Length: 245
Image 1 (tube, rainbow, N blue to C red):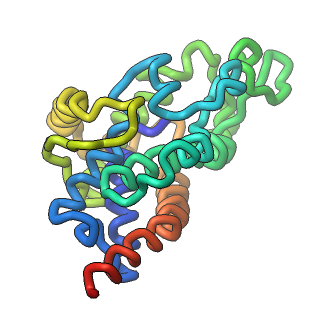
Image 2: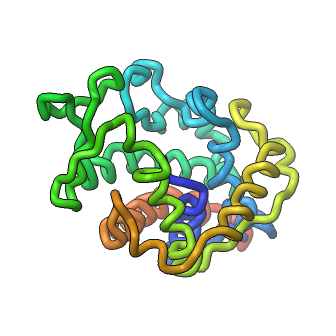
């Protein structure tokens, strides 16, 4: 799944797209932008298998190597609460994760077994073929590590922070947050981790990417932001209309 900084960069892109339509998170709350950014981090307050709850994975996907949020499961339970910046932020986090698995991964690498046959089950995938790196093959056991996949997140951080003028949100109490699966108070830990990422990242590290490409990633982020903004726009337009009465 995308890292913290990627989620915050996507949140900035979405807010810029919405602004072109004269819609703003401030239409929902005075500190709407900050709350939207916090919401975009909220699904990641839990780690490991606990993400199954915060990301609304479909139980049927449990055997898969890549499990994407089931947006319909989230909206079925919380769709009537989509009128606060933090809830919209939560949704766009899940939206990005879902498109990341279903759209971005297949553009970037292919999962196969030892015979080179495409597969998706965790117990079958043994090789990762990098589609933009001369189809170099990386053992699945080594791929999800600081040397490859997760390392690219670290190598991208400084670039994303600067390119998208990422603003790190300030912690605030999200009283009445309705998603029972996620505890907003845990954002304190997440924000501390992001502060450390910002402190340690170095400009120019994006030149050493091993899995992703800048062009491919930015094209995907733009497409995803445009799609998410189209879904959020009616909520903000309604809020703007109500405020003008």
